[in-house]
Image (tube, rainbow, N blue to C red; front, side, top):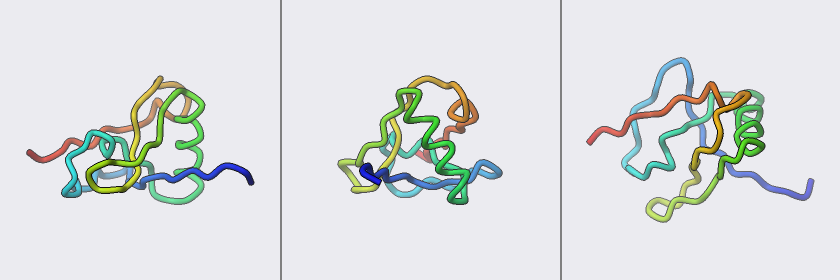
Length: 81
């Protein structure tokens, strides 16, 4: 394997409370489970999403692209203000 992909997790069944970082990168978590998360992450990357490192907390998150394929099932987590 020549490429490395860092992905942030999440749960589609119920939306977890937001972590302390309010950066919009963390609005689009992946489903729990390696296979499900890898499928959605792959779909996102193939539809123009970007997986980038947050400047505030150092964790990776998503900049949305097109909502097609498995990426169309993505859910946004709303930050508590």
